Length: 259
Image: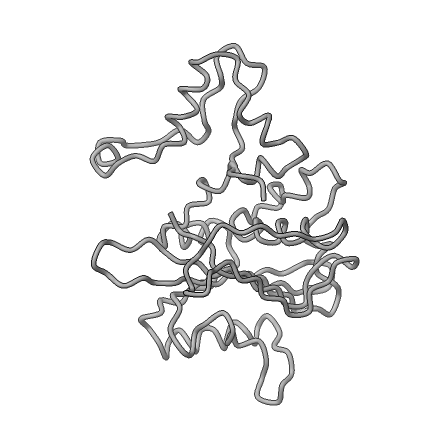
């Protein structure tokens, strides 16, 4: 399963928790991803970080985490101020077959207001040192000015043409973006349980509450990734986990551990 190594936030965040240019590192001294805990005071921006990160995996506005949370309804538009060129980027360490070198991957979103509409551009590529990295995104022009969404798109395409092995992509469309993620084996469904657990206080406890053993077994089988042999025989997978038998609710939306 891909592991998150770093997150970068540029000119983004709710007005009470702004991030001008912040990079969070989830690696040890050797550069390997590790389980990490983010400690901040109340109002320090933990919810903003989660909201913006999950918006890369679930760009549908109806799935925006804060719109589902207990603390009040917010939308992605609340995290981008007028005049901002806002960017959220995740760096991943991808799974590699035995004997092959480890590869890293970037997934990001560029957000900019155009009149009354928040425009979005999703972009992705393999890390290609030293030109295509989290730290060296083309966010500024030759004179140091911040690039607009259109300017960034042009610069990103130029980098993709110059370094084809990076396999750079960009799209404003949610369906194409989901396909790009899946092609890199970053499957949003695997992170859906995290989204559900973080949707409100007690979300993790509710997700693992079952009426009977059949409900637990069904949930466990749903969460288990298919092997290469079984996946070759399986033509399709249900779009949602099965309901616990006799339960009043289904585990339909998805998520992993609350953090």
